Image (cartoon, rainbow, N blue to C red):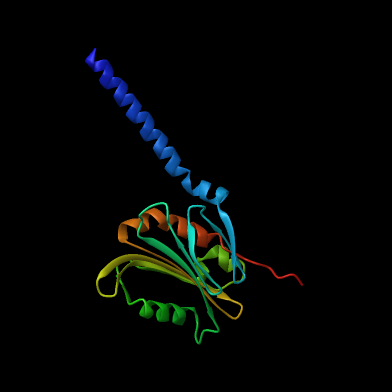
Length: 185
């Protein structure tokens, strides 16, 4: 009889593991279908419903997970009339944040590789990877810079290395589905 109890426990564990895998697999689809639409400086984004806006200013939005203790934040900065191109804006922001990227884990995506935004006629640049911040904090950093009318939209996701794996895919989904808002003539 004791083996029957172990078999039942094993079957229940397998059932719950299968259910958890199904939920995790469908999380990105759910984030899109239940997300909130955000319009900011000429662009539209679908934001996951669990991102809480903790700062709302004309040129800066800050999102955090207030339902968990994740070390993660996303910022949407509007940089009006920047003096240089997208690369210059990124370099200035990285210097301000005291970021030094790891050469072997950082990825720079040129505008032509960002197909969805490139097809809309919008110039963009994306940099992601692990870095050291202020010479002591290890972070996972993802930046997406978009050429807007009269400025650059600088989007960034900053987290601890492990938490980058948790919210990183949702930030990536948010920026990959960006839409330029068409002006009425």
